[in-house]
Length: 335
Ligand code: UFG
Image (spheres, rainbow, N blue to C red):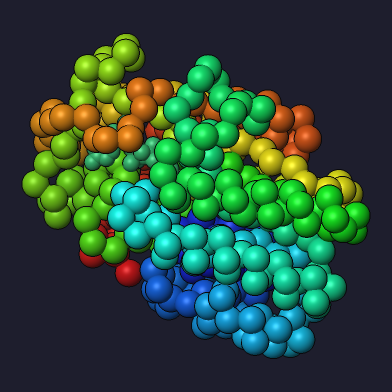
């Protein structure tokens, strides 16, 4: 069965193509290469022993989407393509709403025209905003604190409305907590351009010597060691969560949203200690001021995904760190 994967050469999208292939689906990758390398397609071919169909186009390009729905027998769409830098979204909100929200509406219109009714959307725990209680379940209030988070929540709302208006639509939003790790082959991983915003690529790039040291954003939070606590989840677990969601699209009706996380929190210092244990490489760091917008703790309740999607994260922090490091050591300059 052909499934369209927008943003299929990006971090979570590319790993999901592997899991889809393993589950017997045929990914058709659609990516404008704005924040991904074409080399990822070669890496996927090495891992899967098969070169996936690839369309270089923008999700805002309705004609290209139309052509794609004509050329392939697409039965479901997994929509990853989006801008994802929180800080940048605050500086350039219109770009984020245009690219993430308007283009998602274009995609859904073209799905509607083509008779494709099944959608899995890459959402984020950022839709919850500042946690009011922990662990965060799907009923938690939604109050994003930046345009990136709002763009994700708005797309969820469009999906919800589309499902209410059309009983034949099935749509699932997956709210990721903190995706980390890499494919165990070491051939594919997170490939950020420029200076990474997120902890894990900053840690691995410091370990290779590409960054002088890690700056820990605050050690005065109300957490056991004072540093921020997050629910890190292996990207291959996320990938498998998408496959479970696609499978479910053929039985569930309407709109559904699920957290994808482990339910366990790790602090920045926990991550550094564990990284040293797993890799034998110590990462120089210093403590600096808090990063604006950060919260002390963010941890998922993944209970609903376990119950309905029959999914739970299987890889622990050691595996996440070992896999991230294998990838970064193989490709210290990225690909
Ligand atoms: N951190 C540092 N130093 C760094 C980078 C991060 O100390 O150089 C700390 C942060 O303060 C935080 C933790 O590491 O405590 C994790 O930070 P990340 O930037 O890796 O992740 P966030 O939790 O801030 O962001 C993630 C996703 C966003 C999403 C957000 C909320 O990357 O896309 O969760 O769900 F919006």
